[in-house]
Amino acid sequence: MKPKKLVLQNGKEFIGLGSGDEKVAEVVFHTGMIGYLDIVSNPYYAGKFVCMTYPLIGNYGASDDEFGSKDYHVEGFIVKDTDFISSNMRYLDSMDDFSIANDLPILCGIDTRMLAKVIRDEGSMKGIITDVDTPIEEALLKINAYTPIKGMVKKLSTKRPNMVKANKPKYTVVCLDLGCKNNIISELTNRKCNVVVLPYNTDASKILSYHPNAIIVSNGPDEPSELEVVVNNLKQLIGRLPIAGIGLGHLLVAKASGAKIKKMKFGHHGANQSVKNLVNKKIIITLQGHNYEVDRESLINTSLNVTLENLSDLSIEGVSSSELLVVTSAFDAFEASAAPIVKTIYDELIDLIKSSKGGSNNA
View 1 (cartoon, rainbow, N blue to C red):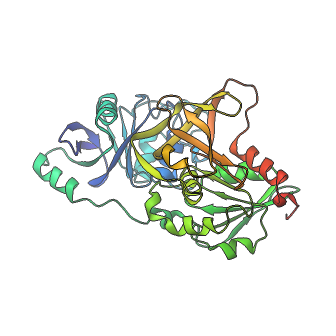
View 2: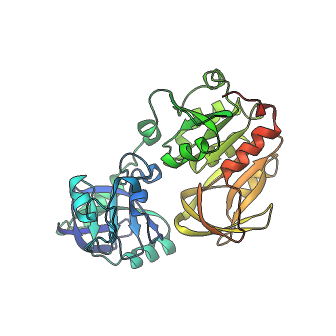
View 3: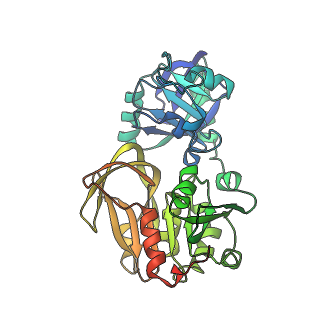
């Protein structure tokens, strides 16, 4: 590593050590203490710099089974320190060695918590990771000239249909791949669903040709304004069979059902987001990564009901409609709950299948 710095859009500089080429991206902060490999490989973070607020990153090394998808997607990984002896019987590399071997750009040694405070107070913004001697004026010119990467979902989505079979399947679920994480497929197959993974822009008639019991729209890089093709296809399917949306899928299903989407000040990123289930009044601690939310006022003239609400800012984390046969969640995992058993969105999708005409066995 060599001296590098992060320059923010507001002119603030953070000097440390880094590797990789000069890059510009949106900067977000993540409050999780573990799961750093899942974070760098989460398709949601494609095209972003991720700053970890917890300082001890890399202390359990790197291993293949920690990946949430098959590759890393972040533009840059910003940490306080990665110089730790790995303590994990499964690890294959230290985080330093892993970053070098996989050409993962890292900036370390900066005050990551101060960076998080700046973003929290002033909102999400662009930044550049560059050589330490780059003049601030030059860095700001490059930031202001930067255009966010387009077409990330197209890049990440599968290019052809793929079937993942369950053991003794009961149902068939089509998954529209917007940057699908591995766990979505495993959660469905564990519930006796064969999963047909299709490109994000597959049209409605093609989806129906697989005779699915339900559709799930996956997570992915959240730029919903680029995905009107998905929204238009979903409009033709809503009410015909159960549809679930997760992460980016949550936003698109809600939009196709009549809601509007708006960008948040700095989003939700971390493993400690408290969410209340408004149906059963239970509290869950969730793992999240999103910069957009459903506009509450836009739900007035729809049949969507708010089912999940963030306790920190009262933003909408999930909606549902028995009339439209939809259920959504802004997250797909939670760390803890106030109840011994809490239904996940996958369980809710199965309930929708059973209670609708989609409940016949199409596996």
